[in-house]
Length: 195
Image: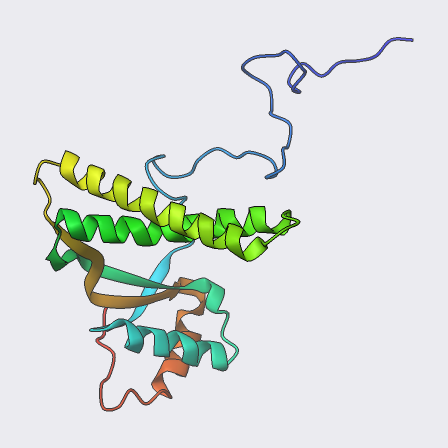
């Protein structure tokens, strides 16, 4: 009995050429576009531009409430700005306190795990884990801050902010979205028309 092989099909041990077998994520496909970004989807149309995210979110929510296929929409923030808000000065003592808090949580977790399997006083095991974790966290927090050499003696929180939020929909449903949007009362604020 002879079997006919397909030279273009993938076979174990075969490198290059042929097609790849499907894996857990499905059959691999060639990247679309120039390969330097997300795959290019269907053409989209901007149906409105808003100065803040809640207004753009309200538009998409209105579309969803009116049975519009919102999986064909996107909210795109443009003119992004990174804002780093300084929260305070970081000292070795403050770094030790922050480390103690983090260490206490970790010690509490370890204490709870050991406490489950303890026959005797499980509360003492949990408290011991909490105290030991806090001490080691404080030590490591202070050492880590000292090792920075004063390069970053402040704490901060970073956030991205956009100057404008555009709501886009796929081109073939843009007219339906515009009709639904015309019924939405934006509190005297009409969406900015963009083409």
